[in-house]
Amino acid sequence: MTTTIETSIIEHAIDKLEDGSLEDIYSDDLHHYLFNEDYFITYYSRAEQWLKDNDLSTWEVMRYCNEQEKDNFGEIQTSFDNPETLVNHYAYWKGQELLNSLELELSDRLTEDDIKNLISEMESMLVN
Image 1 (cartoon, rainbow, N blue to C red):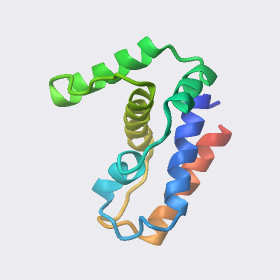
Image 2 (image 1 turned 90 degrees about the vertical axis):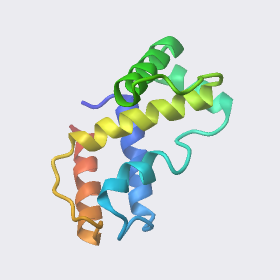
Image 3 (image 1 turned 180 degrees about the vertical axis):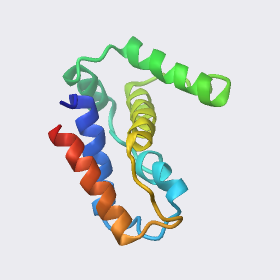
Image 4 (image 1 turned 120 degrees about the horizontal axis):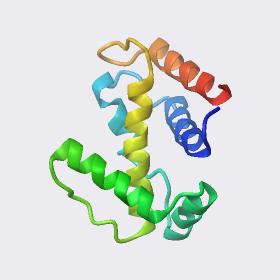
């Protein structure tokens, strides 16, 4: 069973895939388009509520994001001075984990079939 966190991140990715704007992008850029080009959550109050709704401690999320930055960039680059920044970075890193967990061979440039397969695999994660 997926957690609420996983569900909201998967649903966000599916929504972005279904909007039709990702066909023909490089598959290596997929994470950027899904989790870095636009906000996962906007407004401080919505981000705070999202943390509460998912029973997440601000400190846990901050520690996770800092660890990810340290592991991937060698240093902590982001100042988490508001809940919106924190939640969006958390979704960025969890989105990376999501895409890494998929067992799909994608074309160099995403095709309509690649997108359908991505959506299908993500949807199957929602019911497990």
